[in-house]
Length: 636
Image (tube, rainbow, N blue to C red; front, side):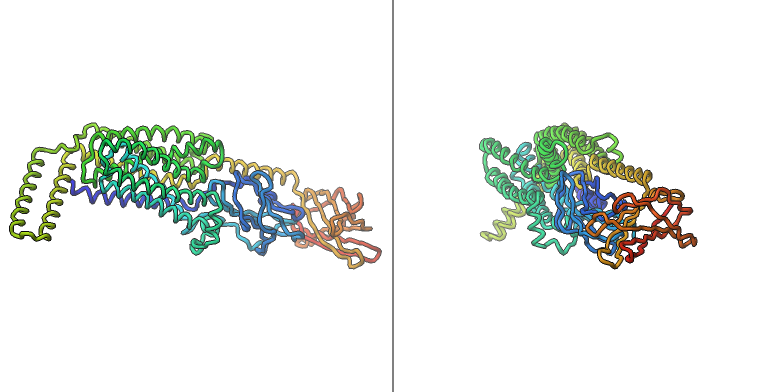
């Protein structure tokens, strides 16, 4: 029966890896953890004249570079003056060039949120009147493509490596000190260290491209790497590498000097290693807490220590579970029931810690019960809770097998007699072989290898003889399988916008849209700006027409005439006419009354039909200098 387990294990591992890959691939681009909650001008609005600047407001502070906030004219040419600045709080602005013509402009942004995730988007607004634009606002995403997928995979490997390394070391120190001399356990913990180190280096290289261009070719761009090192995330990754050097020393002592000590000497060294290992593990966990969800939002002073404790509990549970699985399947030395029982107690404490810290984190990231079902973060969290519940259920089955587990050295009488018989036969062969070969050292080495193989086979039969041990192995294998998927869901969850932020952003967007719609309903005025030049001395200026409500029937019209410097222009005469060329209506002349210097008005301008009306304005600046300028306006 034992021989059939290996193929099943391989199939299960392949299926779990496939499920993990699907989860990571389905995650797509990293969701924005900082959401755009406001802008000036607002999306889709038409402003009378060109603004001096564009400002964006986010749900949290963001990091910007020279090209993070760009404003493009209808032809795709940049019209902003460069790097954006922090105006106040979470509002950022970029200055615009003066004298921008009418048309539709596109605002694009790509920034990095305070919790390290890239945020991108775009919207349009118009000056004077909407126009055709060659700029596309679709597909504005960040953290996608091959670089995004590799970054997500690197995050998963880093979490897995941390759990295996920290949990494996904790398992040895707290549950099975004899395991420090077991080669399979040593390889497991060292593999965790190697995985975390390699993943951290990969994330450091990918970070620059991940938060900017998304190009694979920029992965080895040293200038981008230099920028990354100056960020909070870059500092966290470098700190993690330094702590991994300390972790390497800890592992060397654990599997070197510690393993060679006698049991009494081990007790003294265990305390020191436990303290040192806890400090290093907490530091590694803090490298995540200081740069991700816990570092921004509500109660960061509480959230970051809670996040560290949460990660340590995850590592103690899942990493210890992985090490127990290796000990049950791969270790030559059978693991004692007492060691499994101690791990069961450790795992139970870890689960209680996870529940307590998880409740706090859920409240902090969701903010309401509705966010569980209305946001992607909440839905993923429900999946995670379900997986944890399933894992606890399987762990309860494992605990039952542990209670029925026999001592490590107990085997059936037949197995013991068979093992002794095998050992006697081999020793007899050794004596015969030694007598025939004399002092042949090569033959002696061969006989030694044969004896080692027999001893290993005997230990394996000894390990597998207990049927309860076999049941425990299967239940722990099932636990490990669920843990792999759980870790994948957790990785995707850390890349997903928190429910509280998502709902706040939706509320802000809805409020903005409602306000914009209300404004449009109450005042659908049309504003037309038309530069003019009568050709005479001091003949240049700007005439502005305000038509309210720009509908069929009576409309109120205001005419403003300004000099190039923006001051009121006292001209002797202004005339206006309206023509609907598609219906051959007009021109309908209107002579506004002078209100004050540069301001003319007409109380009732009758427009009989909806359509694209041509508005012509004749401006006279002297007895002989005048000109007519025109622009179309949609009425009705």
